[in-house]
Amino acid sequence: MAFALLLALPVWALLAAALTWDAGAIRVLREMAATTLPDYVGTTVALALGVAVGVALVGSATALAVTLFDFPGRRVAEWLLLLPLAMPAYVVAYAYTDFLQYSGPLQTWLRDTMGWQGRVLPEIRNAWGAGWVFVFTLYPYAYLLTRTALAERAPQLLEAARLLGAPLRRRLGAVALPLARPALAAGVALALMETLADFGVSSYFGVQTFTAGIYKAWLVMDDRVAAAQLAMLLLATVALLLWLEQRAQRRLRFATQRSGRAGAAAQPLQLRGARAWGAWLVCGAPVLFGFGLPVLFMLRPLWLGWDELPWQAFGGWARNSLLLAAVSATLASTAALALALAVRRLSGVLHRAAVRVVALGYAVPGSVIVVGLLLPVGWMQARWPDSSLSSVVTATVVGVIWAYLVRFTAVALQSVQSGYSRIPTSWDDAAVMLGVSGARLWWRVHRPLLTRSALAAWLLVFVDVMKELPATLVLRPFDTDTLAVVAHQLARDERLGEAALPALTLVLVGLLPVIWLSRSLRASSDG
Figure 1: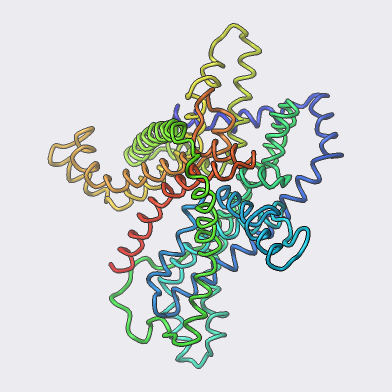
Figure 2: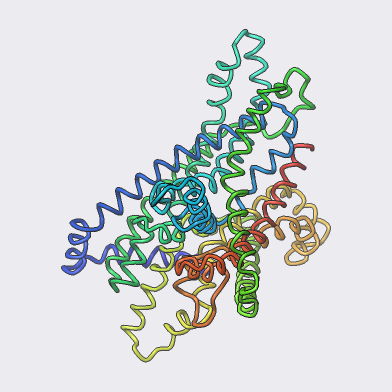
């Protein structure tokens, strides 16, 4: 309970700040409503709508292609479509900017070859460019959930519709898409939460979203009240999306057990010739735009500036990132194991509520967590000026690790709870009857069965912490730069050749959970 309350402190602090209305807070809100707030709202809403439509179209199209149709290389396409999960959105933004900007290689080549003058291609650093980046880095959320939903029931129901005389287009529109709608909605909601939580893309592209506004209000205008009010508006929006996502998940009623191997009639529809090439186009374009091209674009400046790369400094950045990620992943996984065990053994209302509070953490944007952590630190500093508690949070790694735990313990908890769901409680009863209880029961029964889930939890948190930018950017101690922070700073200074090294390192680290996820999905489909 105490740990859950500690993780919930940022949200409670924001609520307290939002409910503390005085003349100054009302004045700040009025000023924002007359100046910046309409831009933040309009830009954020337009960006969210564009991302929602794009993610829904790309996610559903790719899921339909690999689930309902069979074409040469379909198994390869299934795991290739997961690759954009390894790409931090801000790295993709750096890559496209370097290649497509006015001084980039593409426009320079077009001017030299065609004799054109001035700007040849439209500017990518705007809301349209941000939407492009988000769609092709976040569509795997919709793809994964939709693919799972379709794979479990769609082939059999589509075969029944075929036997009733329905043509292919009607089978897809009347059977497949309604089956996948709840899963697709959940995937889109997850993608929107990631979009609202982003800071790297919106800051680098100059897009005035809520997250960029929060940092501007806090760090540039030095106005904590404005930052807290913007953070509360963003938190309310994310809470609505989280409710919609959970509602969509509850509507999923797909069978998880298959009754034997599906017959040949229920197998995916075979595609040959032009149709097979069309399926590969549907699956290949998102992978190309979300992973292949950005990696190639970042390799070019890395190769050209190879002799000038700061290898010694890179070692320090990598060491800081690895240490923070390893410590945070270990603490988050340990806390997740303790919380999951407490709920399993006690299952009281308070313990279930504590788990729900922790599970909300991943939905809270990093910028909101930063404001929620720094507000109580400021209050304590004002109340006890001689106290050193605030310096412990802001001048050491305690603050940044705290923020990591608030945001990513939910990731570890979900993995551990998934592992516990495969351990029947009757096994605990049998162990107790054999004289094994308490800590010995966990060590001899639960621990061996949870090893895979715990390792997966540790890996997922490790990679998420490595890529985390907003919280690290503000809360990191002096001279504790990480790969994500350095990549952002170098790209902001237009030193994209130097930024390529830490950026591509993050991509390589991000491939680890993608490989694990691909193997897990392959094992479940073959099982």
